[in-house]
Image (cartoon, rainbow, N blue to C red):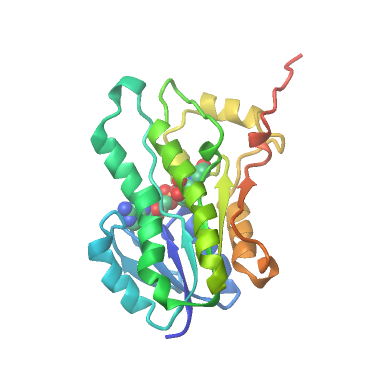
Length: 240
Ligand SMILES: NC(=O)c1ccc[n+]([C@@H]2O[C@H](COP(=O)([O-])OP(=O)(O)OC[C@H]3O[C@@H](n4cnc5c(N)ncnc54)[C@H](O)[C@@H]3O)[C@@H](O)[C@H]2O)c1
């Protein structure tokens, strides 16, 4: 068992695409996900619920005993809720996965991080831009992503002196399971706001994550890179 990169949420979407890219580059990968990854994925898998890190961390530490070269915090959940329907339980659920787990996972694995290790947190353009859809809001989700972006900055400052870099990506609309609940007409409206005129593929984000993990980004820390086809530019299209 050698030094490995941990990918949370590696069973699907952006995390899975990142896992495939890293495996193709010869890196050892450990996936942490509540779901099973596809059977052909040549990565070790720790089936766990990251919202309960007390239960999950021991198995993750065992799987990563050879050392941690990188952590990709890609696990995330979203709930679209009408303003009046938000509840404290929804808050706890979403924060547990999207914001609490990344911080305490990094803390819980800190002693296993190898020199030159890199961390990438998957935030969202919603950390900084308001995205409203179908009359429902993602107020809680968006605030978890803002928290994660902020943590990326403070953790970069804290871990930099140990030679550990911490960066993030802020995806726009990427074609994964998370997009399934968005109605076709709403999707079309989002596409019109995107200068590159298409939705993202998981690989579009995975390539930037791999860059941030790599030695090519050795002097880059504390930044969250937009991977959104330009959607966060705030384009207003004329229709005539
Ligand atoms: N798809 C988009 O448009 C988009 C946009 C911005 C940000 N993001 C972020 O990208 C990340 C990846 O999402 P995705 O789009 O690939 O969706 P996805 O649903 O395909 O992947 C998320 C993965 O996280 C796992 N997961 C969820 N809760 C978990 C838990 N408690 N414990 C362990 N694993 C858990 C899921 O099983 C899933 O495999 C998320 O953090 C999401 O917020 C996605």
